[in-house]
Length: 114
Length: 114
Image 1 (cartoon, rainbow over the protein chains, first blue to last red):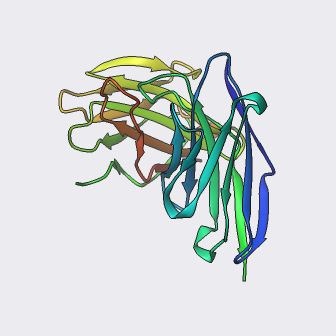
Image 2: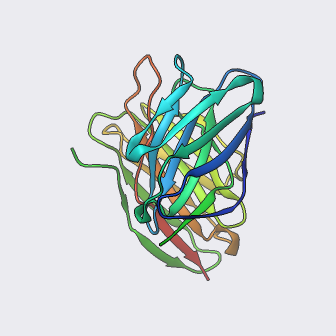
Image 3: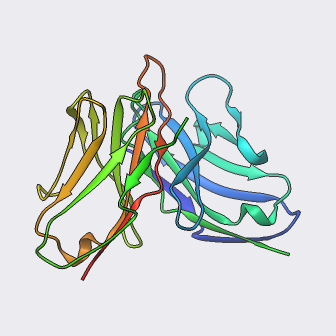
């Protein structure tokens, strides 16, 4: 069985500060890994994904994540937080090329303080 | 290109009733997946339909069912509603090629069971 753990249900940063959201996965096979963002009353938007190839993945809105197999981690970072980054972030894993059957972490609510 | 649309956006039902939610995928997308999002359980995979057939199923009781039509539109049905079925139900569609297929999420239907 696969699972995802997000460390910290709430993270608060100042505008302009580094954003670091942590995600560890447990999977018996090399997984596909994702970060999604959810704004209030909206669906999920894909920030970035790791499928194969380069382990440092760049996504939208200045976010990036690094797949570290030895640490079973896929942490999300952004060098400088913006007020518009305030949202809930979900790490997810899938073993299927169909992209379906995503297993999500519990989510991390990011607050950006002025 | 229009995104994934879900109707209705909000729904209020009482215990014991049944409900049908609708999802229209992005044009050309052949796979539709459904997820339930609750504060307690987070995001959980319900099922996936591809070419009118259920391809994957999550761990939900038989009260939860779905179907897909020839135009790829999908419906999910919940019978004998319980208070715990109150949730945001998200639909996602994907193109389905031989490579990894990104899931595109709709805004969700918020179901409240009284």
